[in-house]
Length: 234
Ligand code: SAH
Picture 1: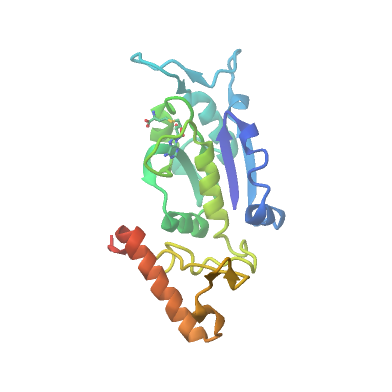
Picture 2: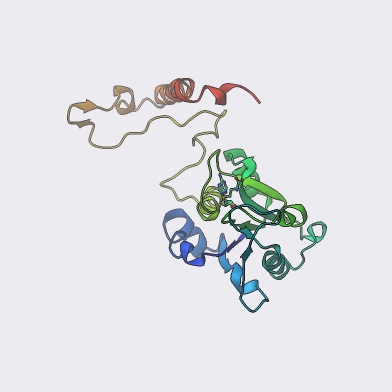
């Protein structure tokens, strides 16, 4: 998979993809991640990436021209119907569809090239959304000052689901939202007794069927308590 990030703050990404699973996936060439400065796609003298909003009001709006130029260069065309198969152009936006594990899985399974557009200020000129974007995605019902943290969230959630990205120390099969939409069960490691707090006995007895049953029960218990909404079928 190839991930291209469009941002006016490329420095933001200097080290975020250099740790753990994502770093390993990059080294193993499971994913290639490139960061692009939107400013380098400007053509005007002042290299402007934003401008005042039509209709007046506060704040600035990100201009469409540099973003169109960037997509043309990175995808090969700025015509959405001509994007190569497996191309997803994502606009990070609080107005988008809320990102879920199921969406991460779909990207991991189906996308070959993901372009993440990070907005700033009041957002991005709507013509970017109208003409270029295949997916408008939000990471939750709150407003960030920029799309960069959201781009990191998407990239991380997607890359760890790519084939062979997870090492033996991590497994996705029992992750939250994966198995029947349950939260994950609680985990413990040594020591078995820490300041008087004991690890549940069942985990120490080596009876795998019983452990499985306990884990399932705990996952269900926690989901019921904290995220009842997950148990209601959509
Ligand atoms: N005026 C806009 C918010 C702009 S916030 C509105 O109310 O809809 C500036 C940028 O931050 C956005 O363009 C977007 O790229 C990013 N952003 C903010 N909140 C986000 C969220 N919940 N999910 C994804 N991106 C978000």
